[in-house]
Length: 286
Image (cartoon, rainbow, N blue to C red; front, side, top):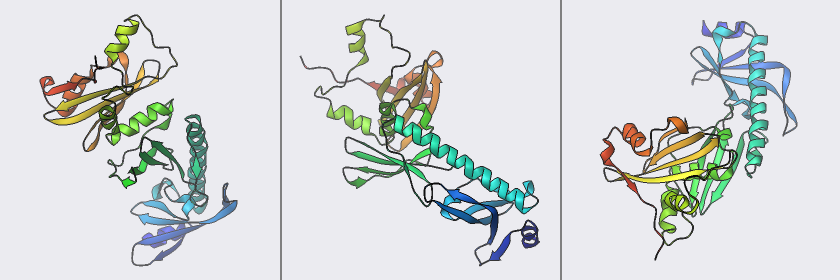
């Protein structure tokens, strides 16, 4: 029944013992803009009511096609073309955003997968975008040693207007900001906000387009946590709470609605506010 239904859609079907595989011969081949060749056939894995693109490399990861939404081969092809063009749009858009952040945009010729590498103070991260344009950390190395990755979670690149904000967010995932605090304990550049207020006064303003990053170190029931925030635009920030096991929480928030670091952490970790201890920035000697 399932095989007959797929054949009615104009697909070539075969079963090699690992489930059904369906192939669509495209009436108008897809252009690979980096490899300068064409994709003439698309292979799908059949998963229940979905056709999941599985080959060639250019289409792996494109959004699945729901069988109930298509009635003939041309509709299947239209879905593939739309998803492929959407991916190319994301590659172009995200490549421009990476370049604006001072990062290299690398597109693999065969798979058309977009990636980049971020290196900062011995930490090297490889970021890879999925077909919908969302990034995640694909590999992490510190001083030549591979690091375990946080749970697979994607992030929106456009939320980071400056390279420093992106680096701060990524570093917090791997505990690098805690290491930076220890390294800077001798006064190598870490600044407490109390020092800023003391120097410039409470009337000082942050210009609308300038970047702003914040780091708060905490301890909750003997366990270390890091809260980092980076300004997205205006009064909108991107916040991150991370612990020894990686990211706990990450969301945008409006400055006017932010409850404060301690109440937020207490609510997220389901502990009393008294259990959340702030670890002050190191003070200058003398």
